[in-house]
Amino acid sequence: MDDPVTSESGGPVGQGVYVGNADVDGAADAGWLLGHFRPPGDPRHSADVEIKWGVHAPGDERAQWVRGEARTALLVLISGRFRVELPGRSVLLSKRGDYVVWGRGVDHSWRAEEESVVLTVRWPSIPGYKVPDPEVRGDGVRGDGVRGDGVRGDGVRGDGVRGDGVRGHEDSGCSVSERGPVGE
Image (tube, rainbow, N blue to C red; front, side, top):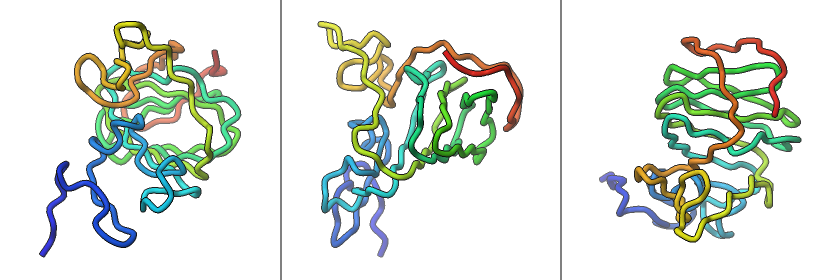
């Protein structure tokens, strides 16, 4: 008989097995579910790969460009419209299943054009590789409107970072469109 997966059923269930919910389990780590940052012995611990369940409100953006990327990444659109900015290119993911892959050394940023859910897989999993969090004000709210506990004021979980003002042009469908150099 199958065990239904519910947010209450998350956790280790036996040798090398973990059952959970991406929204619940990823909330504490900006959506990251699997990687070096999980404790050794946890089936979600891996030095080989990282997996993120990203839930983004319209307008969510990466706080700053990733420079000197040391990993390869795959980003798959589950729902919404999500733009990935790469040097010289802007990629709009607009249909469920659209995806983009970029390799080591490729700088990047992103922006949710509407409420979006994306799955990101990157490899290898490298300790200490993280964009610094904005400072938390005395009232527990970061400068980007995210409370210190990682929850936006509207209750939506995700990394909710905002920042570099990168905006893409409007188009429909998954497309790779040439633009001028992308940067700061």
